[in-house]
Picture 1 (cartoon, rainbow, N blue to C red):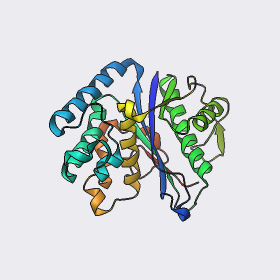
Picture 2: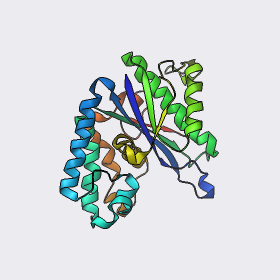
Picture 3: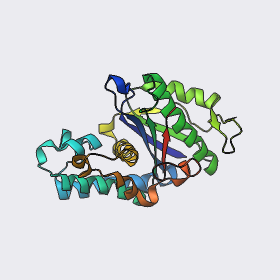
Picture 4: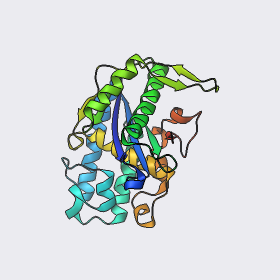
Length: 254
């Protein structure tokens, strides 16, 4: 079974009303066959982070905390260079965890979608990619996501099992590809209780920055090239045909 851990970066609000210019979903994929070893590696990694930087094992680590020196790390006195090393280490360790990562970026600059339209476009695009991953491996998929829009996500997943379309690679219209391998309802998780959801948060922000380069200050922690630190963990199949700003990053505008 494939286990998909998903978190978001940005918001679905209209840009004209102060919303972020993109809304991004980050996904970390693990095989259930390797889950125990992958999780053990994640725990060992967090222990190394604790020993070097003093960040407690129970502390939540998110992109926003590293960028702003806030949240669980606020009182540790970590400079931008240290926070960059922490962010980069999270990207690099995913390959050691035998994980794959991809991101769905909704670019709202040209077509300012309504909140629900933006949210659904992101999730439907992600579910299409999970359906392709499931079909390629013959394995079912279970989804774990950061809690917040639980009912909306559940409705979209249930609908995708019955009916979902995807564009044909050959430009001949849409194909019906219901995601019948999605197992049960998606499972909402508190991000502060899940290292893997926290990894997905960092993946989401790095995916966004692969499309829209950061300011000089932000780049000291997460430069535009941060996505490429994933190395072998980039799920290149995700956008091999459609292309994008980086391997594994899908960009949608409408």
